[in-house]
Amino acid sequence: MTDFASLLQPDRGQPARFIDVIHPDAFGAWLTLQPPRTRALIAAGKVTGKPGNRLIIPGDAPEDWAALLVCNEPESSPWRIASQGEVLPEGIYRLRDAKLGAAGLGWLLGQHRFDRYKQDEGSGPRILLTGDPAAIDETVQLAEATAKVRDLVNLGASDMGPAELEAEAATLAAQHGATLNVTRGDALEQGYPMIHAVGQAASRDRAPRLIELVWGDPAHPRLALIGKGVCFDSGGLDIKPSSGMRLMKKDMGGAAHALALAGLIMGGRLKLRLHLLIPAVENAISGNAFRPGDILRTRNGMTVENTNTDAEGRLILGDALTRAGEEKPALILDFATLTGAARVALGPDLPATFANDDDLAEALLAAGTAVHDPLWRLPLWDGYDEMLKSDLADIVNAPDGGFAGSITAALFLRRFVPAGTPWAHLDTFAWRPTAKPARPKGGEALGLRAAWAMLKDRFA
Image (tube, rainbow, N blue to C red; front, side):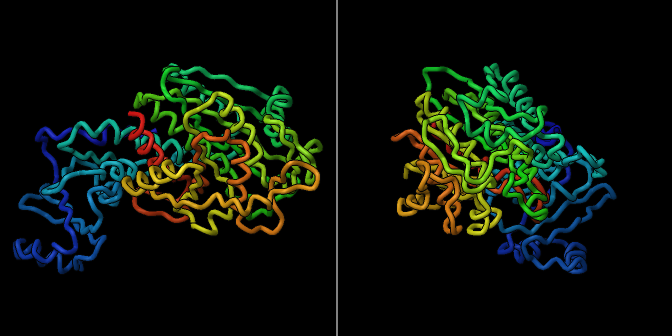
């Protein structure tokens, strides 16, 4: 993991090069104040004051120079100077005539590299000085949590199976003095039959499991935090085409989000009794794979007609939600890379957000807007509940027709949430298909900072 703490340091007057961040509307006035040679250099560099323009401006001595960035993003944006964190030479920097605000996060993440399989050939560390040292710790923790999601999702499925997710949870428990309980393999068949059914076709060393971590004062409100941990999704007997399987190592992205958020909660000492649940499976194909048409038992007693083995995420989440509800939580929050329909509707950047409580939904959306981690609410439309009807069982897992796929998946999950318990479900992509400054192509945390900001506001 990148040593983020060394890259953001208190400003005590150390020698440092300046970064000038100029808003496009102020560029003309700023330019008139520059000496003639600087104006000539800016003209030669074709810097016109458009957002994204940047240039190195030399000073009087060879080692004396400053970095110019034209940027129209507010101080609340973590990505305001992210491009500088990626491209500037090794050294120490400070902003001139500007507050750092939230931009420290982008500075840190711009220097993070996933180097498990490929050696990083980047430059040395770029250190940023800040006059707000009180904000350093949380900025570093957010960078570490975001990088954790990215790294876990980027791992190949051969290196990130159910056992590896369990190991991540065990490490987290040891770091924070939490307790860990894991139900594995055939022991799932009675208590967690849907988790067992989905994962039973995998090899023994990749056996399914329900991972549970508990932390915090029992007197505090209980938060159930659930992450979908499908470590690879072949589609099962309803097998995906090769193009559909290409990124299915990322189908444990919900678990990655839940692990990272749990780390923030425990590290931030929120006044919560945390119950982290990760149903971890591989949706594989073998002679004992579950089949289309199978009637599955569930932990809460309902029966489910399995109409599609590629709609397996909602099955394992159903048993986990039931287990969470047995402890009477004050709040349930789940993350899942659940449906392609959510991506068709909202694209890669916006997690589809469902909630059975308007106050909770509004708090999540407002937090996402404030920290530039946007969410978009979709409805738990009661009129579509009838799509889940089965002729043979209580419900089906995937309705025919394909209409409203993300909504019907959320409605399926709602069947396992205790009545009256506030619950939010984030159908997140956990992947960035194209790179942006400090946001490389690959695994991505989408909805993590929004959920953290909401929880911190409620339970700090």
